[in-house]
Image 1 (spheres, rainbow, N blue to C red):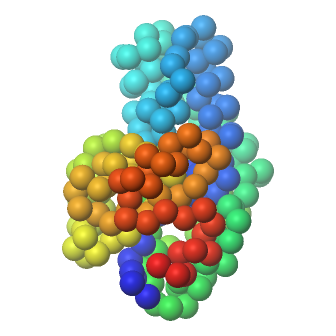
Image 2 (cartoon, rainbow, N blue to C red; image 1 turned 90 degrees about the vertical axis):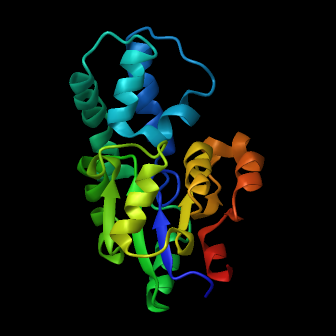
Length: 214
């Protein structure tokens, strides 16, 4: 096994949640008659709810407070994460096999614990991870290089010994910038960026079972 320390994104990587996530974030813009570009999901996915709220207010001119925006995001998203969203194909089986082989598994996601934890527990995945972190635990976003350095410090391993897995181009690119090993993950929501992600990543997988062959 080439790697024994894995740092996983959550949305679009471990769980098939991007359709729900996208629906929530675009619903808020559309309800407030805010125009947005075709790259909006690429931009906001690494930001988390706090970073996205800030972006909506400061960059898109949405006339709500950031706190009210975050509360609305959580209200819209909670039911989907608590009851409907499922793990992606072969994720649970692969994680269990990696654990059996002695790997340490971690999560670093833009999603808040209010939806993250309840979803992982419902799917029986929560206890497979040594630690589960939201961006809110670090006070920054996955668009900032520092968060990957801080995660490596908490893990207690050299940053170059950790394999980070994410379906988002901006998150992958930022992790690469601090010398973290990166494996791009296919998700339909980021399909148009597949070749870009492949170009910057050390590995790329379409199915989680491929992790066992790295």
